[in-house]
Length: 289
Image (cartoon, rainbow, N blue to C red):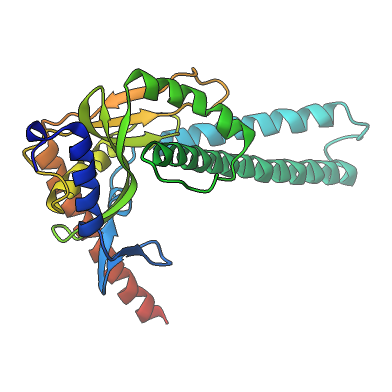
């Protein structure tokens, strides 16, 4: 398969046929593990979960400090305006305890709000996949999504029009025996005329792990025989804004191709560590049974 000797339409059709043949039998079990026949594959995202996330601990600590500070201010304000006689009375203790329980309840509601935000990200992914499938001539049922998710499609649609997005494959599963890795990529498409592996993100920022994930999916496409390694293939991570204070424009990060081979080797090593940890965990749990 070589793009210079084909029209773009012929190339797209060829890739879709190759993928259908090469991906036959790939499925995901109830534990979200990739498998083909009896063989299990480590998910790319699972392997990357072992990698360091230096931004997570400071962020979590900052959020906790802000939450604790705000809770203390609210409790102090209510105590100051109450008719409780003083800090040594039972009524004071009861009031502070009641206010603390209230703060805990509101914190639980805040966690639900964060979960709802995660659901919003999934809804945006579903809408994009539905739109891309229709562009490829595949009719899917309309996804059940919120009005907010539909509203947030506008920046993505503007970006897609700007880059003349031509989808080839959308939300497609892959496995490769090299590294025993599996994963589901968001999109293979022509972006401004260049064949590109695209990963959608809806979080607060784009991180290194997203770049490594994209490199993994690009490499897996070639290892599976879907894409000829000689065909140039770029990588993009596109963040769709979903927060109220976000600028309503997609953030685009180009994946550096210089270190593709090193990142692929690192990903395979992480997958090996992930499997080794799973084996050791089973031993440890068996010893405690």
